Length: 239
Image 1 (tube, rainbow, N blue to C red):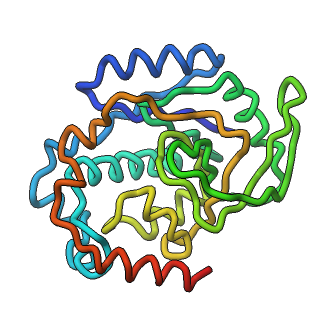
Image 2 (cartoon, helix red, strand yellow; image 1 turned 90 degrees about the horizontal axis):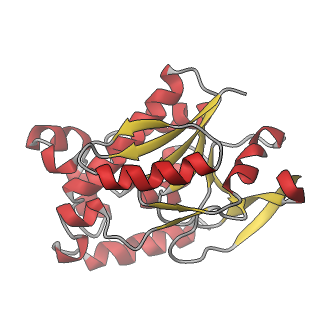
């Protein structure tokens, strides 16, 4: 199967690129750097084109920061590359990653999966999310790797695998968008794909402040708590 590893990295984040490069190279894989969309340079016109402010007012607890918009657009670039490069799938990584030593073994099992899949989470860096294994294959060193389903997928987008079909479906729906990418993906029925995971997880995030937070801190924005309550209820009713 034809695949590539994409590393999302801002042009100005040279130290992050160095640290991420060293980690990926130790796994034996090559990667392609994908220049991230810098939210700090987005024009008002571009933001209005891709960010659905009206829906955000009705359904999300704040207006996205420029950094969050840039992050979403960076992932969209990767989805487009999957299609344009005629890949079967791509491993998409962010440059604040911490890779586990089992990364290569887990990635090598992907062609063995017999189930159709769209989007595989490779990390769960924040709140733990319950899952149920649906298929198990064996990786290097007799490592059991399980394809898992979620009721609610993990947040964070530091490491994932996106199939060609998954990329097509995502691009058919986005942009515009009104939530951060990781929250949007939790509402998988709205973005038209199934979110699954590969366990054991093989990536985490570093302790260094994210570039998104450096541009603008979401907690400092005007909040719409009633929207959060409504959406929590709406989500639970779907499950």
